[in-house]
Length: 370
Image (cartoon, rainbow, N blue to C red; front, side, top):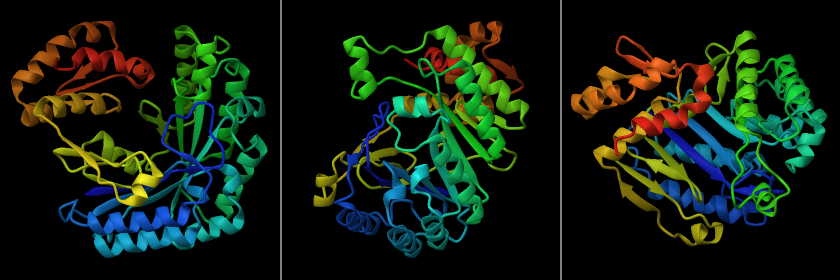
C-alpha cells in the first residue's frame, strides 16, 4: 500500500528552529490549493494502481487551511486513487488553531488523526522558539480535540533546548503524560544555518547544548515515556500500543508515496521526485525534478531508515534485496558496535537499542557502502 502527502507551506510566523520550506501569510492559499488539484490530476498514475493506506497534511501549518479546502483535496484524491482501505488521515496543527469550530470541520473533512506541534509546555521556552501559542493554549487544544471526537492524537516535544532542560523538560513530559495522548514525538533541537537560531549562533550569542546534556536528556525522555507505557519504536517516536504513526512508517520501510505541493517529495520504488521549493513557481506549474536511485543508493537508504527503528534490519531480507556480499560486509563493519552494545544482533535481526538511538547517525554512517 502507498502513502499520500499534501504540503501546505503557509505559516503565520517563523519558528526560530525551523528550516522546512514555508511562506509567511496565507494570501496565496486558494491558488496554491488549485495548483495542488492540478498536480493530483497530472500524477494520477504515479502510484501504479497501489491502494492508498495513509494520507498526511504537513507543512508549514496545514491548520491554516480551511476544512472545506482540505475536504476537497481528499475527495479529489479518492476519485483518482483507491482510498477504500485508508487507515489514517493526519493533519499537522498549531494548538491555537484548534478551536471547537475548526475541529468539527476537520472531522467532517475526514481527518482522523492530529499531529499537534506543542514543542514545550514551558512558556519561556515557547517564547524562545518564537512559537505563537502558550502552554495553556496547548492544553486546551488537546481537550478541544478530545471533545470533538479525536481519539488518535500525537504531540511534538523538543528537547536539547539551551536553558530548558532539567525541571523544565520534566514539566513538559509530566504535562504530556497527564494529557494521556496516544503518541508523542520528541525531537532533539537542531540548529540550522538559515534559521533564527542559526543566525544567533553565527553571531556568538546562542549555542547548542553539549553532547553530555544531549545524551542525558534523551535518556530522560526515553525513561519517562517508556515507564509510562509508551513504546519507543523509532529514534524520535513513542506510541501507545496500536498507535504507531503509520504514514511515517512508509518512509522508513520503502513504501511508495506521492507528495503533492511545493517542496513535496515522492518515491515510486526506484525514483525519487521533488517539487520546486517556491509557491510562485509551483503555482506556475514548474515540473518536479527526479533522480534514479542506484542499488548502492537504495542499500544505504535501507540501512539508514531501518536502523532508525526498533525492529532494525532483517539481515535475510537485506540479503535477498541487495545480495549476501553486501550484507556480509555490513555485518563485519558492525562488529565493533556490537561489542560496545550500541548494536544488537539476535538471529537474523540487527538493531540499535532504543535507549541508544541518539547515536544512530554515527552507526549508520559506519555501515554505509562507500
